[in-house]
Image 1: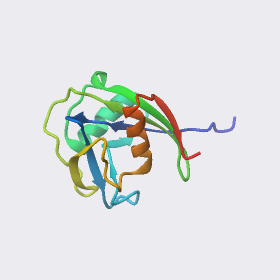
Image 2: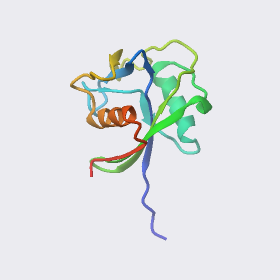
Image 3: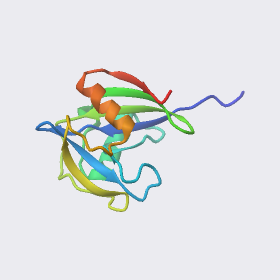
Length: 144
């Protein structure tokens, strides 16, 4: 039987407080360096979207999130340059630990930015997802 098409899955964190969202500026990754995104990462095998996202948030910003405390607020079917992706954007108000840059070799700035006034150099599909989140739209398609 021929191999079936597969998607790449990723989990993203919309951590919001007082009208601001936590963003990190990418560096030395080879993808969108110098642009802002939210804490995120690829899902691995044998983990749910929320489990994988919680793992990534711990690895990137040092917080412990119970996967059950993550709420999926937006899903994006995204066509990238070489593949197709399903991106799960999540939020939570509940976590343990202090937010810190755990990967300074991949992130040269971590900070809070107004939801309504994101930096010009925010990754475009992340900006689209944030705008959809603010409009309470659960699903979008990007890159088609």
